[in-house]
Image (cartoon, rainbow, N blue to C red; front, top):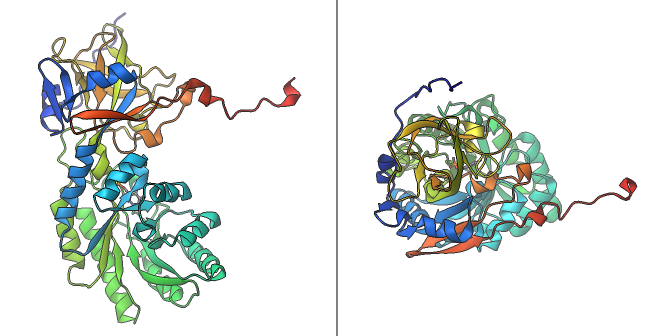
Amino acid sequence: MSAPAPQISAADPTTAELIAARPHLKRHAMDGLLLDGVPLNAIADALGTPCWVYSAPTIRRRLAELTQALAGLNTHIHYAVKANDHLAVLTLVRQGGAGADVVSGGELLRARRAGIAADHIVFSGVGKTAEEIRLALGEGIYQLNVESAEELATISAIAASMGRTADIVLRINPDVDAGTHAKITTGKADNKFGIAYGEAAALYAHAATLPGVRPQGLALHIGSQILSMAPYRAAFARAAELIRALRAQGQTVTRMDCGGGLGITYGDEAEASPAAFAGAIRAAFGGMDLTLMTEPGRWLVGPAGMLLASVVLNKAHDRFMVLDAAMNDLIRPAMYDSFHGVVPLAASNAGPDRVMDVVGPVCETGDTFARNRLVAPVEAGGRVALLDAGAYGTVMSSTYNSRPLAPIAMVDGGTWTVIRARQPVEALWSGEIIPDFTA
Ligand SMILES: *Cc1c(COP(=O)(O)O)cnc(C)c1O
């Protein structure tokens, strides 16, 4: 019995189009797919697959482009560490002049370990624990982004007990729809994030009376992979209106944190433009005498990373291409139905593109990287790159199915280096204890 004829939902970009749209990628007639001039097959030969590869020049170039777009706006860039928290990535970000937006004590310590100054760190998140708040206050970070009245009370009490005064901003929930995937939208009233817009002014006035905290302004973050400026404009306008109202009531407002969320090209969508983003910020907050902040994650690092995998076999009359990478390595397709370009590492395609499902070996139907996708065929033993996996890739990896964490290489200056070795399989059980009562 043969599989039912697959349906292509939309015209997928071809291998050539995927490569042409990415300045860091080239296909060489002898060496195959190159990342910043380095043959990816050479890295896969040395490290085995699956493995990750990051492009340092791409991270530098994108940070410089965003910095340039925001020039003259008195804006600090705080890189959202959760997108990719590797120390080498954080080091590049620091060298590019950015600070860090962290959402856990672990991320705060990582950012410090990478040399990011405490006064260049902001702390976001709906459930900061007392321990994390104490850590942040002890380090003397730039600000805590407060997400609720309850958290405000906790921070005030802890800071007062430590004899500190914390600079805080209130993260408001502007109740706008970012028009992105439901699992990554964060600025609607029924999302768990931030303080209800209608309650923010009263809470701000209350914060100004509390010991241990100094309200400095507002923050918002409406979601991720946002491609249109309209939701930003709507959210920024609401924030600007609230700032004017607070000032009219005599409150001091010096800071506005505009969040992250800028979207990138995965398939053939146009990525969010830094110039347009800067324009939206300028339109809402220009001339308001504010220190402005942004928290980009995905936009800075997403295009800079890829996952290399080998084809284990093609089955069911070439309906399924089975890779040695799986959802435990890159969970985004399973979790968010996300698109990642699948490109052969070989110098030329083995045949005309055909419609296939590109899947991993894990025992879950969700372990599918691409469904009904027009891809270049790759024989068993050949390799592919899953593109644009630099953000929310390695950081979301697990060891599900007892699959060790894959190694990571970084490309720079025409050469490459290992920045994380493959996890030894013994490490998977090294912390486990078999209790005596099983004896
Ligand atoms: C996740 C997150 C970001 C970064 O989002 P991107 O879509 O990766 O730019 C910024 N700020 C906050 C508060 C976040 O939770």
